[in-house]
Amino acid sequence: MSTTFQPVLDRIATEIDATPGRGRPADYIPALASADPNRFAMAVADLDGTVCGVGEWQHPFSTQSITKAFTLALALSLEGDELWEHVGREPSGNPFNSLVQLEYENGIPRNPFINAGALVVTDRLQKLTGDASGALRTFLRAESGNPELTFDLEIAASEAAHGDRNAALAHFMASYGNITNPVPELLDQYIRQCSIAASCGDLALAAGFLARHGIRADGSTLLTRSRAKQVNAVMLTCGTYDAAGDFAHRVGLPGKSGVGGGIIAVVPGHCTICVWSPGLDQRGNSVAGVAALDRFTTLTGLSIF
Ligand code: DON
Image (cartoon, rainbow, N blue to C red):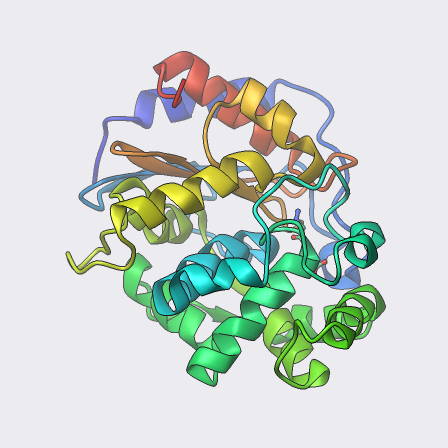
């Protein structure tokens, strides 16, 4: 076990504990609504895979949109630059589930992290692998070393029962020819992907390839150095949606949030961080999670700027 970051994590947890105002859990997916905003966890993984943490850092939570960083990496590794013909890489300045830009931009979503863009990436991965969510789970299990990591089918069912907006996005993009699989199959894969439960420790380890410039835990190459840079760059500019500017300003790291209250962040060449607290702000990012990452980069000086 690494102890390098333990004192700073302990200090952050104490500070977060003393800070009132945690936001509210996502309630548009009913199974997420009852989460306690006072829960908190944070873990840091070194490049060599040693990990330390604080709070409930080994407790699995609903990863949701954090998975979009991993599916982007997997799709890029298989498809290469052709992927960028189907999805852009500009910040949208709109909420993660917005439909408004899609018609003006002919069914090509602004970036891979808004829901429309993530649906396109999952569609590409489904075409390339025949089982996008299974490929993602296999990857996350290998990188985290946790063979138990899996889908939470209760959360998947809850999202499926309230998935009209994602269904609308998928059908609309299909009308432009930017979705290749049948929409119901795509939605099933996407919802399973988002339902993956993993802990802060699992996710800090699984994101390690982004800090190692594309190199997986076993030393093999997932992405070239250049493509790892691309994924980190899109995380910095688009990973927290219409709050990406504020996140860059406060934290100064590539990051990817999810409405389960988790955020992963990358210090390229150094370490990966995952934080979790289910209370969200208006833009769908964890209030305590962003605050903890803000403190982490301030206390350690580890930002990309
Ligand atoms: O598609 C959705 O709305 C959810 N499964 C994921 C959204 C999400 O996590 C946005 N991130 N902050």
